[in-house]
Length: 166
Image 1: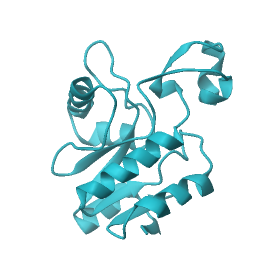
Image 2: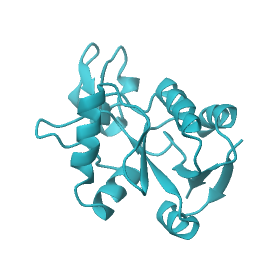
Image 3: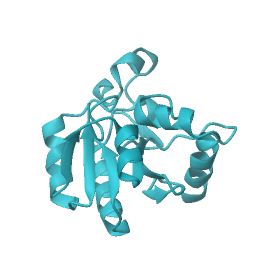
């Protein structure tokens, strides 16, 4: 089971000197840049110049997003799809709902987090078998219930993973 710590992701990463996971969606702009507009993904994009293009390149090569070591500091941890055909506006983040209707193909950055993608990402992170810090996935701008996500984290992650929240 992972450790849960109330702490800042970046401060703890610097203190422990281990990889930090960044939660991402799978969307890539036409110019090859990954959309990293909120939360820890945005923070990482500000701290690491060129990161949006590096993540975009990985996503373009792989198709569906998967857990990947980006560099000596970062691991990408998908929580949203590249796109989703929506059957309900509840699948869209609240501040984007006015732009879409049922049946639309919605880009990942506008979707709520997907519990199945988070579960797959947990499995893939565990397979890496390295210590890492993971911001509590899907509960901020992903709009998921923390208790449901915690069940998935507890089921799949080892004590090598430190889950941080604010």
